[in-house]
Image (cartoon, rainbow, N blue to C red; front, side):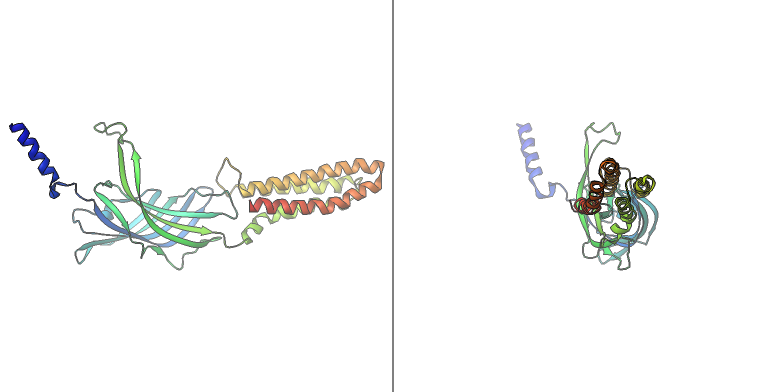
Length: 313
């Protein structure tokens, strides 16, 4: 009988409002980006100088000391003294950091990139601590400028990030999961126009056109006829390595790879045409001349259409 009474009492106590699970503490967080420098596509890095601030009510917390940058390393951190704004604590710090940024170069040099500042608390999980984004004040300085890009948008969001590990703590289950509140300030960069595209591929385009000028040379003049194509092919290959040196290693084909391969392919076909034209010339010079005239039109047009198609798909 006593056992039943105790069980009934326990049910009553757990059902009381005061016995319910405590709500996690809410901390308002925001960031203001001062500078974005050192955009390094090959090493997947970028330098960012920004301010970060927190507002919270629980005096037992200090998010200014416990926050960490999840996708990079903080080079320097200059906090200001925590002060009271009425009943709310306020803390701010200037941070200079190097972000590990996975660039999307599939459309390079017409690429669009997104730089992300990702912040979490290093101490408390989402059960005890959640961020609230200060969307009204999280933005970029008007003087922020990234060479070759236009800053089109930016915004702050909050998400829950799950870690499926016990971090080697044997007191926890092997598949233990912990969830942390994550703040992300995303900044979108886009190429403003096709100028950078033309500058990047200008050497390739000119070399390909030079290769097609071989159709104006008689097939029997072997040195200039084949020398133009071979020289153009080497120029395109050299340009390919120069462009690739600025990009991260990737198993996929970028727009740059496709344009380079298309150019090398068209130059190779022009060399084959020269060989065929030479064979025809020995039998019928008029037909060889007619083939060269048609090739002088067909090859540049086909090459231009191919480059446009590769750029737009």
